[in-house]
Amino acid sequence: MEDLKSEVNKNSYKNIEQSTKLHNIDSGIIKINDILITSDPNDVLYPDIKTKARAIIKDIADVTNDHNVLKNAVDFIQSDLVDVKDKQEQRDSNLSRDIRSFRKTVTDTSDANYALSIIVEAINEEMKKANNTVLEVRESSKTAEEKVDQTNANLKIVHQHLFNKDALTAAILILFFLIIGLMLYVLKLKSSVEPALAGGSTSRPLKGSREMEVNLQKMPSKPTLKNAVCIISFDSSNLDEYSGIIKETVSQIGGVSFRTHVIRKHNDIPKLPQCKLYIMCVEFTERHVIIEEQGLGLGDLKLTSYRGVRKLGGALVILYIHDPGSRRLTDGQLYSDGVYCVKKQQELKELCEMDRFISAHKNLNTAQKKALETDELNLQAASFARKIIEKSKTTDAEEFLEDKT
Image (cartoon, rainbow, N blue to C red; front, side, top):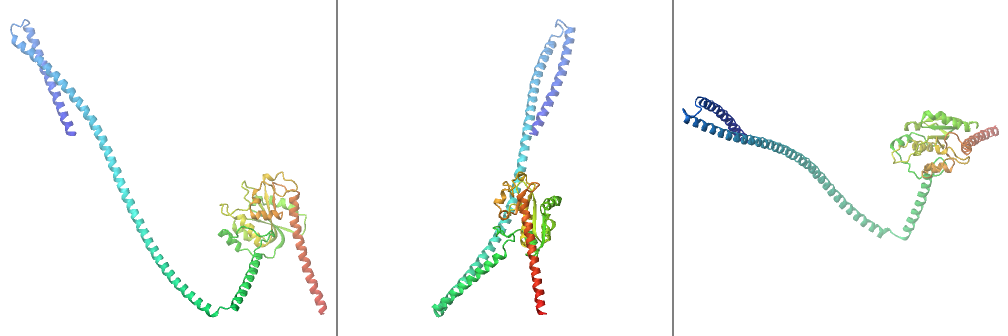
């Protein structure tokens, strides 16, 4: 393509040079003809020369026209050559791009084949290990079958020599007493894990998160509790408000002290004061997350607190505070019907059955105050009974000493 273009350019230059020379010759002939016409206007002196000059001028004009036609043809060819060159360059560019893309595809394919070969080798290694394991299992199964056959043979021998009616009766009696003992053990175990709320067992499994288990293990099981009320809050900024609402209701009952405890993290739960009554204040949420359901990604801080109080053996009241749906409760209602989780969650259902779940906006109504006062009076009665028992024991001891003396 470049050689063809170069040859066309050379011919174009030659045509231009020849056209220039012809033009110069034509100018010279015309000047000569003008001189002859001036000196011999009647064609008397140089008729042949004038005729030849006119013929030469005509021939030069024809050649010039031919050169012009050739020049136009060369220009057209040059224009076509430029278009052909551009198209050829575009095709070369596209071809180069396609070649690069093809090389990249080949490289990627090679890399993928190499990675695949590595994976295949790894799978083959795992298959070898699996085959070895299968062989070991088969060997173990064969050995176990041999032992089972041997055991069956031994049992047949024992059965043939030892089995009789008295032995069967004794075995049945032993099995009967073992079942009775197992049932008694199960009943005892069940009674030992009954919830301390006196509301019956819960259907929720006791297993929780690792953090829950670790912190519950740090807490004593049913220690001697003080005749006190512990107000639990999960936000220290609201603790004063909660304490004011509760103390305004039950502070007139004497003999009972108050404690407060803020739980921000699981490590705060084992530090709960050992009180006979706990009032756990839970702030309103749109989803009514009062005690978390496990497996929903909501954590288990309040659930761990609930189980911690159970382990201590204290009674628990939940005060669900700042609930908008509790603004217009009647004097006989303890909680709003809009708190739907009390009907689904086992822990809350148990508390509701014992009138130990209360929802309020800011102030407590008559039924709610009565419920809190009842729990307080129960503490008072328990404390009073304990003092009487201790006093009677002391009196009996003194009378015994007097009798001895």
